[in-house]
Amino acid sequence: MEKETYNTTEVKQTMNAIGLETDKSAELIFGLNELLANYQVFYMNVRGFHWNIQGDKFFELHVKFEELYNDLEQKIDEVAERILMLGGAPLHTFQDYSQLSEVKSLKEVSDANGTVKGVLNGLQTILVKQREILELSGNADDEGTNALMSDYIREQEKLVWMYSAYLK
Figure 1 (cartoon, rainbow, N blue to C red):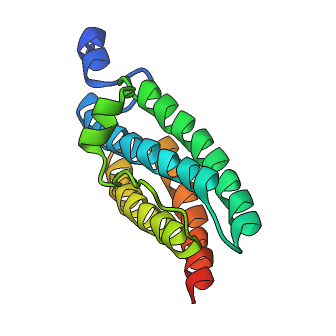
Figure 2: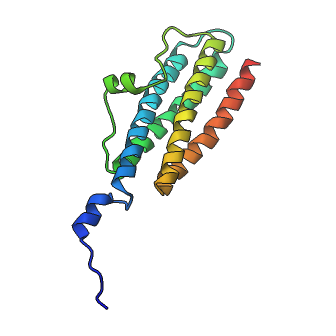
Figure 3: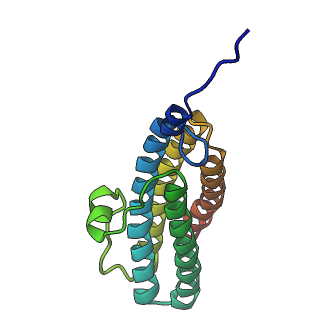
């Protein structure tokens, strides 16, 4: 019986550098770029909340918003790097971000309840996107993206709980 030979060029064209199918990776790249856009707009909102918070909750929220935007900055970098690992190119213009993001830019929000509601809305929107990517990554056998989204979801669900408790 003859050993079957494989066309390595064909295999390379259907698989990316980390061994995932390119068509499934393309879906993930698009979803991750959408997530990246949402993260970038959300990051700018939280930065604005940090800079502009006023009132008797200033000291408490100023620190919390700094913690949050520092965490978001790290996640933005991780998502962009994951896009590169999958063989894509991360979006990097504000025009792209504003067109793709479901999180909307918030201006002139400086009161405690308004800023916390802005944080909650951003987190809730991002959680939906991450769950969509989690499903796609599971279908693509992409454990790296799956683990990343799973970690983010767990962390952000706790933040939703905490910021929601603040509003009660």
